[in-house]
Amino acid sequence: MGTPHNVGIISTKTKEKKMTKNFQISEFECKGNLKGCECKMTANVKNNLLKLAEQLQILRDYLGVPIKINSGFRCADYNDNHINGAKHSQHKLGKAADIVAESKHPFELYRLIDELIEMKILNFGGVGKYNTFTHVDIRDQKVRFDKTTN
Image (tube, rainbow, N blue to C red; front, side, top):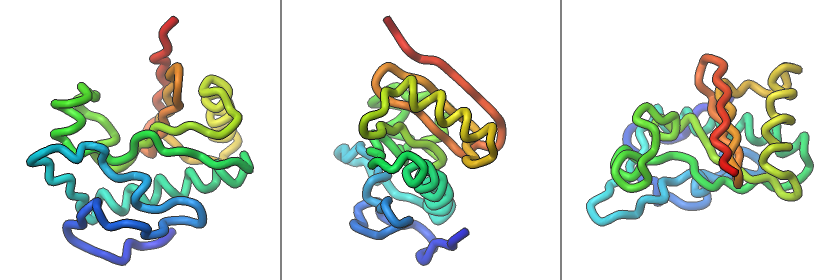
């Protein structure tokens, strides 16, 4: 597993730094861009994002199709005050991504990811099913959730 090249506080506005063959740090940046929102990533958050990107790269290679990151890192202000994210969201730690895979319905992707975890191909702790995307995270314990609506 690679080690981040930068240490300390790193601006999420640093563009085009490759984390893996197909994922760049810019894809995981906080979408806040709010007035007064600092959106800084600590070295620990960046290291978590690298581990997350490595798992997503395994998934992308397995699928053979691009994966879009809808949401990666979220600063606390954006998560807590603007999108009403979970209080203890893995996104705030840089451990989570909400993803869409080309030509895969989110329900199908959810099932496939869970199977790949059981087969020890992937190492995600959390997997969540939503109507329009799939949530994955690298927390240490197994958590599954269904947030779909009719």
